Length: 315
Image 1 (tube, rainbow, N blue to C red):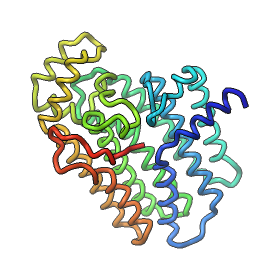
Image 2 (cartoon, rainbow, N blue to C red; image 1 turned 180 degrees about the vertical axis):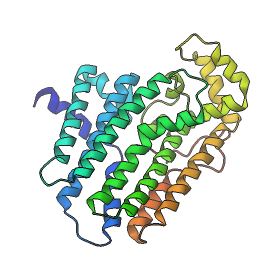
Image 3 (cartoon, rainbow, N blue to C red; image 1 turned 90 degrees about the vertical axis):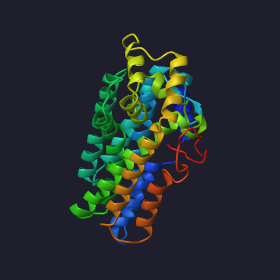
């Protein structure tokens, strides 16, 4: 009732592609090997991971002062940062209420508690690295691990836990999810330089504006040192002016830095598919391989100076 009900209604009308619950449910079906599972436990866990994901997006948008999300006005712009923060907190509370009901899997609860802790660690680490133009690839992948890859891996492993799978099966699902998550984030970072706003559901060029050094920019700075010298001349904790942002985006495309990042995404994608070979063959394994393949399927062979196919979408 009241404003809270309207906020929840806005969130329900602005859903993404439900990647994380899809992964959880598909991995559970794969790990079950045809055994019947309790559907209420599965759907409650799937709902919980989507609630956690949505809460994390609300909080991220407040921190980044993002204007819109999933092609709509960001929640904090519609309702103010105070109400948006509390709405995100409420979603987290509801998620853990679902996970902690009597008879629920305690290991699953601990895994998703660790996931939320990692999301917080990743956000703080990323904030500490803002405007660090000399960020290394190792540091970049560390941010990705905490903010994206671990969560996606946890959703996959959660499916195995719910199916009562062996430690080896859960390990393979986790390995698949970690590599899928890294590939997912690299593609997101590529689209920030090469995509259309509607593909990302948020403005392109946002990473530079927010002082985030992602893989395409890291490659540019490592191979074309003159651009690193330019940004090092900026005042501390300052985004590049618009003209320099435009120069950097063009340089990233012409230098082959998007191709470099795309090759990295495809290596992670291949590692994800390789991990599936340790799991039982069947429709669910094929679906997981397809989810990995979709990440880069619509990209051209090279991204140098060319736009991305608008069918590429992330959530």
